[in-house]
Image (cartoon, rainbow, N blue to C red; front, side, top):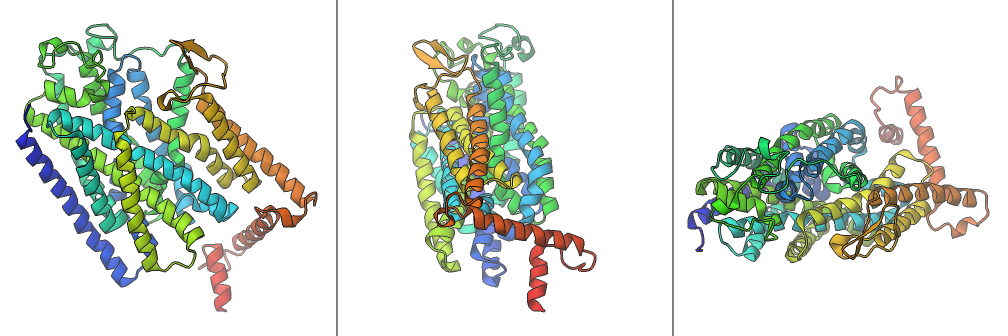
Length: 558
C-alpha cells in the first residue's frame, strides 16, 4: 500500500491551520508582554487571567476530549471484555467532575488567584512539600501525553499508511511550537479550532458508518451475539466493585489535576470560571457519542465481507486500532480523511494542554518557589521555554512504549485520585491537616497502591484484598483498590496531622524540632481567620474592601 497523497495534503493543511491559529493568537501574548500588563508567569501560563466564556468552554472540553478519549472510547465499546457499561463511565465521570468542580471548587480557587492548584499546598505546608506534590502532578501530565499521541500514530498509520513514528513526532512538534510561542493564549484559541473540527468531523462520519453495507443494525447487536459478544452487556458480579472503583477514580481524579484548574484559574472572573465548568459538562457528553457509535458499529460488522477480511480485529489483537480500521473499511475514502483529521485535532488539543500544565507546575512551584526565588521575569520566561521543550520531548518519547492507551490514561488518573485528591480535600476543607500528615498519607497511599499490584505496569499483587483471585496464573484484584488506597491516604493524613499538632502544641517535642512549622503555621492561620472575621464584621463600614488583602493595603496607605 502506498502513501495516501490526498490524505497527506489534507493533514498538511490541517497542521498549517492549527499552527497559523496558534501564531496569530501569540500576538496577543506579545502585546501583553510589551505593555507589561502582568508578570511573565501569569501571561504565559494563565493568559493574564483573561479567558472569556466561549474560549474557556472550548478549551476546557478540548483538553479532556483528547486522542485517548476519542480512540479509547471506541476501543472500550468494541472490546467484548468491557462494552458500553465501561465505556460510558469515561464521559459521564468527566462531566460529573466538571459539575462538581463548577459548583464547589471553581469559584474559591479562582478567587484566591493561584497560578497552579499546588499553590494551595504551598500556602498551608510550605514550598518543600508543595514541591513534592508538584512532581506527582507533573508525572500525571507526562503520562497523559503518550496516551493521546499513541491514538494518533495508530490512526494515521492505518488510514494514510504513514510511519507511526513520523506521525507522532510531527503532531507533537506542531503542538510544542505554538505552545512555546504563545503560551495559554495560543493553546486556548487553537483548542477552539480543534474542538470545532472534532465535533463536526466525528459527527460527519457517523451516518456513513451506520449505513454501511457490512454492518448489522446496532440496536440488534446491542443485546444479541451476532459477529461477536453484544456491545451492551451487564457487569458481572465479580467486577462490580472494580466498576465502582473506576467510576470514583475518574470522577474525583480529574478534580485534582492541574489541567482542569489551569482553565479555571485563567478565566476572566470567578463567575466565568464556574460557568466554563458547567457548560463544558454536557458538551463533553455530546462529543463522546460518535466514538461510542463507532465502537458499536465495529462490533456489528462482518469483517469477512470487507477488504480487511477474517479474522476480526479483536481476534488479531488489533483492538487498540479499531477506530482507524473502522473508518478505513466502513466509510468512503474522503470521509475517513475527515475522521483522521478529527482524531488529529483531538490529540493536539490535549498534548499542548498536558505540556503546559506540567511546565506550570515546575516553573511556579519548583523553579520560582524553591530553586530560584529571586528569578526575574526574563529568567522565568526562559525557564518556561526550556521546560516546554524538555517535557514535550520526554512525553512524546513515552509514546513508543508498548502499553495500552486506556491503561496509561487510567494510570495517570490513578495518580491524581489516590495521591492528590485526598490531599487537596484536606488542604481546602480541614484546618487540622499539616505537613507531617500530608507526607505520611502520601507514603501510605503509595505503598498500599504498589503492593496492590497493577497488571498494566507488570506490578505483581502482593497485598491481597478480599475477593482477590488467581486467574490464568496471575492474581487479580476485584476489590475497589484505588478507593481503598485513597481513603487510607485521607484518614492517615488527618490522624497523623492531629497527632503531630498535639505533640508540638503540648510541648512534648521542642518546637525547634518542628521541621514543618506546625505550631507557627497554625498561629498564622488563626491570625488570618481573625482578620477575615474583622473584615466581615466591618464590611459595611469599608465598602470598597472586598478581601483581607485590600483591607491591609488600605491600612498601609494610611
